[in-house]
Amino acid sequence: MTSSRPHLDDLARFITASPSSFHAAAEAARRLDEAGFTRLVETDAWPTGPGARYIVRDGAVVAWIEPTGAGATTPFRVVGAHTDSPGFKLKPKPTTGTRGWLQAGVEVYGGPLFNSWLDRDLEFAGRLVSRTGETSLVRTGPLLRFPQLAVHLDRGVNAEGLKLDPQRHLNPVVGAGPLDEADVLGHLAALAGLAPADVTGYDVVVADTAPPARLGLDGELFAAGRMDNLTSTHAGLVALIETAASAGGAGAELDHVAVFAAFDHEEVGSATPSGAAGPMLEDVLARVSDGLGATATDHRRALAASWCLSADAGHAVHPNYPERHDPANQPIVNGGPLLKINANQRYATDGLGAAEWSRACEQAGVPFQEFVSSNAVPCGSTIGPITATRLGIRTIDVGVPLLGMHSARELCGADDPGYLSRAAAAFLAPVA
Image (cartoon, rainbow, N blue to C red; front, side, top):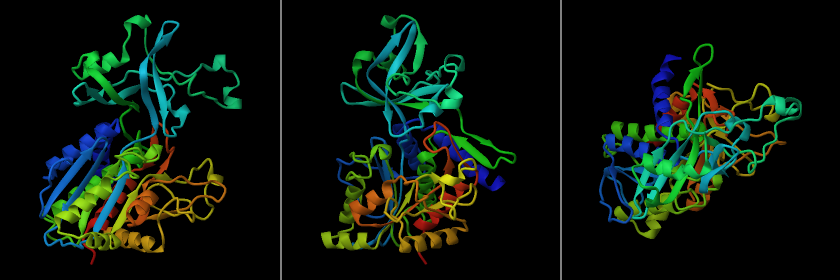
C-alpha cells in the first residue's frame, strides 16, 4: 500500500485545512499560488494570452490553464467537484441554553446522518463578515458536542432504533454556566480579532475535529470527515496543478483549455451564485473565449467539442447491507474510482462518456468500476447533470467509492483517491 501514501497524506492535510467550504477554497487558492497560478478578480479586466489563472467566489474556486496557441474555437476540458459537505450551520441568535447548559442553535445543512454526529468533538468553522464587508476565516477547534441520551434513560434505543428530532435533540452543548454570560458569536469574533459588534454577517458550519487516519489490517482503508466531496476537490486540484507543471505552466503542450471547478452548495441543490446551477463556470468560460477573440458562435463551437468530468463521491457495496445494492454491480474499495450511471440521468454519463472515461483510465493505468443503483433504491445526483444542462457540455459522472456517505466520518479505500487524481490528470492531458 506504499504507493498511495504520498497522495493520501496530502489529502489528509487538505481535509484538515478545510473544515468549511470557505477554508477549502482558501486552501486551494494557497496551493494554486504556490504552483504559479495568478489570482484574478471578477470585477477587473482579465489579461489575455497563455497562462495559469484562477478565481475564488465565496466557497468556490475555478482555475484554468490557457495553452499557447489556443484559438477562438479551442475546446475546454473541465474537472468539476464541490467543496461543501452535509452537516449543520449556525443560526441567527445562536446562543441558547437551559438548566445550566450552554448551547448553540444550528440548522440542518443538506442531508447528514444525524446519529453519526453524536458524542463527537466538533468545531465551528466558516467566515465572518464585518460592517465594512471584509471577511475573516475562523475555526474554533474542539468546542461543541451533540450529547446522546444515555441508554439507561432510553432502554429501547437498541431494539427500537434511535429517533432524533432535529429541533429538539440537535442543539449542541458549548459549555456550562449562566446564559447571560455566554456569547457564541462573540467567541468566534474574538478568534478573528474582531469585536462582536463588528460582525454583521456570518456563514459558519459544524465540522468534525478528528484527524484523518489510515486503518485496516494493512493500512488499506482511510477514514476522515468531509470526504464527500473533498476527495474529488483535492483530486481535481492536484490534477490541474500537475497538468500545469507537465505542460510547462503556460500549457504549451495542451490542445484544450484545462479547467478545474470546485463549486459550493451542492448538498443543498447548487442553485446559488457559487453553485453549479449558477453562472460562475459559464461566465469564466465565456470570458476565456472572449480573450481568445471568439465570437458567440465560436464559443458555442468550443463548448460543443468540450468535456466535463463531474467528480463526486459514490457508494461502495456495504458488507452488512448487500441487498441495498445492484446484485451485478457491487463496487469494492481499492477497486478504482466509479463510473456512475443512471438511466434517468441523475448522473450524466452516457455511452460516449463511458468510452472517454475508459480511455483516460487506461492512459493513467488506473482500474475503474461501474456503479448503478438497485432498482428499488433511487440514487442521488450531483453537479454532472446540472453542468451538462447549464452549458451543453458532454459530461461524465465519476467518484471515489465510500462507506458511510454523509456521515460525520466516512470511509474509503486507501488507493482510490490517488486513482481518481491520476485519471483526472489523464483526462486533462492532451488527447492523442
